[in-house]
Amino acid sequence: MELKDIQRRLRECVARSGLQQKELAKRIGVSAQTVSKYMKKDIFPALDTFAKLCAALDVKADYVLGLSEY
Image (cartoon, rainbow, N blue to C red; front, side):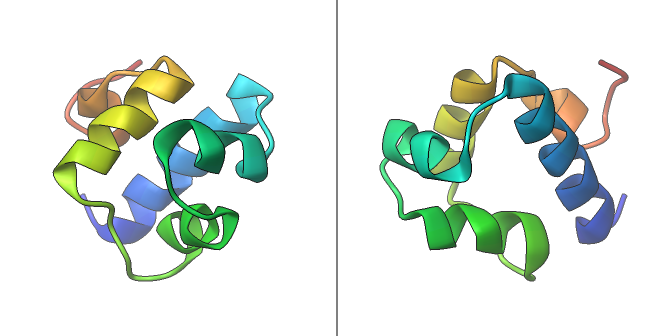
């Protein structure tokens, strides 16, 4: 799985959550611009931030990383 595939899954999870990027960013302790970069640029969150992101989106890390199907 490539970063672009992880980003696609991440975008899908954000869309399903109904959260705005600003609200998601607040929940995980980063800026909205940083959340945008996770989904569009070659930037991946630190592991602790990734864990918070998955928890906020109520999604398993395995799914985002392409290791399992939802």
